[in-house]
Length: 203
Ligand code: TMP
View (cartoon, rainbow, N blue to C red):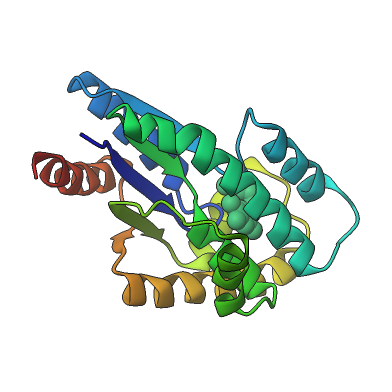
């Protein structure tokens, strides 16, 4: 039987990585075989290319970002996510295609065109069984990030993240994501997500 594919999305600083990792640990304790993975990928060559771009002082056009993120996604999907699902594992991905829609959308790429690129390439995305959108106000995300990183361009960042958050909320409504209020105690959020996932896994 094909495994289950669970995706976590949200703006930077929303707490989705913490939640994805907590869920992975809990499901392993329950005896499931779990692949925890992420985009940009950590150990694939395409993920390294994306990270080079993100660290660079150059700011290429949004379409250049999009193509690199897509290159990484296609590699990730075909060579990591797909095979793990075939083996019957639970795949938990910290970010997936909706990050491109929300972020590159906020950078100015028309969302409809993003799926159009995949269509031209003849690439069909593996659909997740559930997408959790960990939602927090931008203010909260910025406060959290300020504690762990040096954020300099706060105002620019704020405006950009507002757009990303709006895009996510619109996508959530259109595509039926599970929106989780991320501005709460970590364990409380985890409990809510775990309940939903257990229900999914029992189907
Ligand atoms: P991370 O901080 O979750 O590792 O993600 C790196 C950054 O890349 C984050 O700001 C979101 C952004 N991103 C996109 O803009 N498009 C994408 O398709 C993905 C996967 C990430």
